Image (cartoon, rainbow, N blue to C red):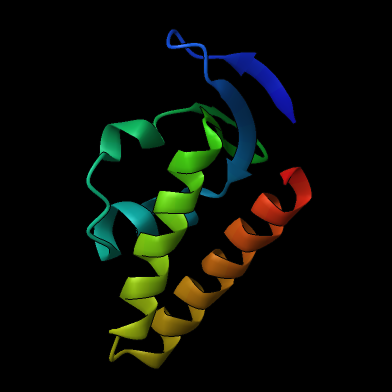
Length: 93
């Protein structure tokens, strides 16, 4: 999945998230860098190209939001997103 490198020389990894997953990160977490969520949109979703540490940070924000969420449906969506990020990180580690 390592498909490029950033200007700083860090390896970038592609991850495709749905528009809903991007909206969850942007709207339901305290993720500090929403501009990192910009990517190429196609039929599969939004293609992100980021260093691994950014995905790890993103996963932490999703976990915190899920743990403090009072809405069960929203919590379930955040839990699924956490699992998606965890599976991705496990696959590239």
